[in-house]
Length: 571
Image (cartoon, rainbow, N blue to C red; front, top):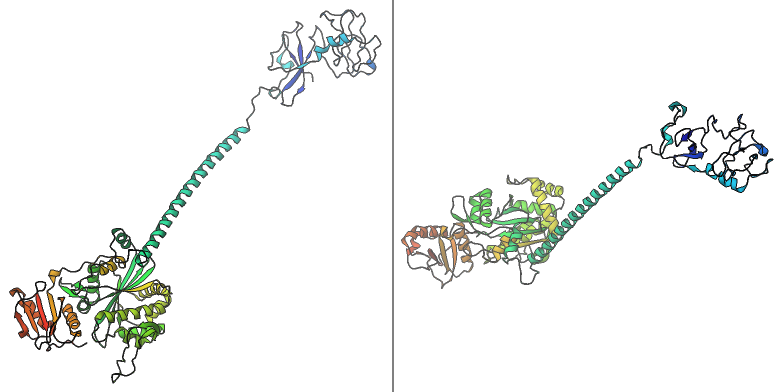
């Protein structure tokens, strides 16, 4: 390379630097050369021969002498007889030599004598290289065109930093990683909260079931704890009312079918006919009379008002349809509690249609006979409980598949209440069937006092915990209270009179028994109650002449003494 760099002003003997290459970082590398003398030719280290003796050939064979050379002594003065320059020697020869020797770069002998070690040391600065940090301006007398420099030859040229994109990508990565960590923490917190809620619900459900089943010490379904009542009221329930109509013997039996979807339990709640309700015109009546007079809609609304329930539909089940239903599901198994005679038997004492015993298999005809049977002297509650047994037996045999259960309902070809479709009833019965087969089903009788109101303890507990409502019996002042004393000598006549009075809208009070008497009496104490007393006599089938004013119990408006002339209604 012929590029040179002048470190000082031209012509003053200052050192010059020659570009010899680039280092591993791309920076130019220079080496120091002697200052040029006037008319000095450019140094060419690769030339074989120079016409003028100002240069040398470092690769000349045999150490030939140059025709002319120059050198400097140790003191920096020009020697009298110059000698050839060895770029690989330790330094220039010291002054005092009259005749310079030919240059031998590899230390071989020269014709004029070998240079001394001191000369080699004197020449050493000429071989040192140096880095030039900046480009100097052109020397005096030189033009810019004489030397060409390129920006890529200097270390200070700015180059694009390839690491800048890596830094941005790293910042994005760390930012995304931080966001992912925060999202993972949020998801973890959500899972923990959800797990805590599930565990709390599971614990509450387990305790609620044990409490409802009466398996917790000191607690039962009849307890009236405020917190438990609130939890029971918040549960989801599906409720329909079933009215069994005895088309041959007369009378009805009513039950509520309850599917608690929260606790996954099913219940049949049997409602006595003596349950006091409020009729459409605001007067007090009984459940049996409401079914007969007010129909399905009126009775459903009255039950909702008294029990605080939300009944979704009414299912009227006449005894012929009950018989067909049992035959469709295929016989049912019931633990019967009485021998039931065959209604078609011509003589008493014949073989009963239904035998008393455990796990009795009943056909459709037998199931109807058992569900409607009421032995002499029994209350209506006994017959109602038999009806509940038949209902639960049917549910155990019903298909748990909603479509199959709907097909069974449609096969009955019965006319349903507009509030209940075939599909709704079939789906509802299929759900109860699944609970009955799994043992999560029970039957409860709603206890009712003599005046038709719900029992304050047991009855209110069933209403609250099973139905999720609150018992609200009609105002006692709205109905005329009647005290009945039995003097007929037949114990069952008291129950028959109670049913008749309750169906007539009166409040029944048990007066006990008395010595047998031949004449029945209806007594009132206040003149304002004469009309009520006359109405009571008509309801019981007694003549108007049996009504008289007299002294009665302070707890009743009208007092009745049933004599031997009393003839209870048939059925």
